[in-house]
Structures are given as structure tokens and as C-alpha cells.
Length: 111
Image (cartoon, rainbow, N blue to C red; front, side, top):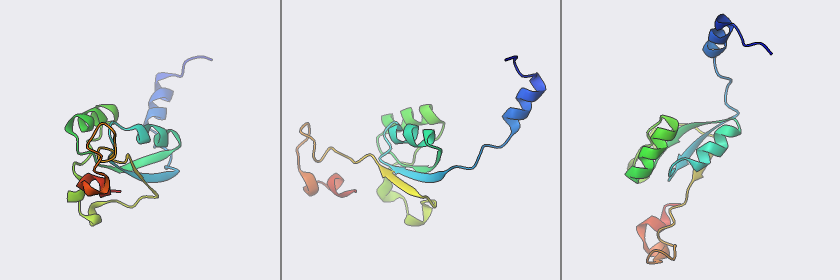
């Protein structure tokens, strides 16, 4: 097929994106694994939080959006409307690599 004309390419680029199939918020976002999958399914991320600065910087490089930090410091009313809430469960409290304090660790009850 022939390449589109410059005018056709510009018109296609200027057309609005289709509405999302669903809106989602992600907690403990890491570097954006859930976002990769959900965007591919037609979702739109409306909120992300990630406390680890290195993971948050990678997330921002991957998607152009900087996630907010500590979710415990975000007021409920600041969380936008969403259809799906995802969370990359903070596993430090349960991992064999950690102290395995489970629910005795403050991070262990953030789900």
C-alpha cells in the first residue's frame, strides 16, 4: 500500500484517541507491568502510585507520567474515578528474602 500523504498523516495524528474501554488506578505500580497489560486491553490509567524512587523514575520514563509516592499520604478524595483498581502487592513483608514479618510489618497490611 502506498504511504499516506503528509496531509492524511497529519489528520490521522490530530484525530482524538478513542474513548477508553475502562479506566483504572494502580497502586504499588513498580515500573508499570499492570499498565502495559491494561493499556493493551484498551484501558486508560487515571492514577498511579509508587513509593520507590527508582521504580517511579523508570515508570515515568516508560509512560511519561510520574506516579505519586506513598499511597498512605494520598487523600481518598484525590483518587480519581476508576473502573478497576490494581495493586502490585508489596511483598517485602512476606518474601523469603525479607524478615517474613507478614501482617506484623506495616507494609504487610497495605492491601
